[in-house]
Length: 193
Image (cartoon, rainbow, N blue to C red):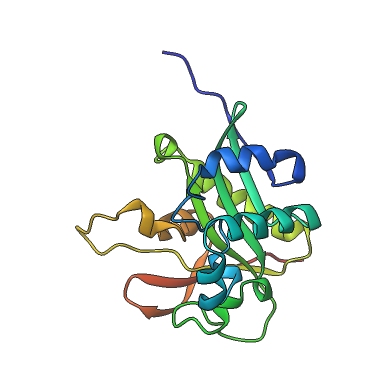
């Protein structure tokens, strides 16, 4: 049996836009999101859904810095992780689940998207670990996430796991610092100096 190529995770740059677009497909990953949901208010999102979100994400990529990371298996894009300093995610400032616990600056992993045929193959964990390194490299002191933690026996529909699965983050050293709903822990990892 042939081994699949190793995963490689790199920032999304202008040169990689076509790969991002191919990974997300014509629907922008999920219903025209293009990973703009956390960056916009509900009204802005409704107004830009689809092509408007695609244009907005492309503008972010062109302006820089990279709004996230792409995972590749060989030459194929297989996964995405949106991450940035918390203040870039306006929707979470008032979110019941993700509003800040304190005023300490933090980076945030806002979304994980993995190509359906690559799910369960370590792509999310590779993206989370690369996000930790990326945030630290860019001066981050801590990184936060708000993944889903399914209840025992509950089957999780992938479209509802866009913030990731809690166990992926705990394996990467995140610790629970709050829980405002039963299935959405507030996780944080200190990055040190």
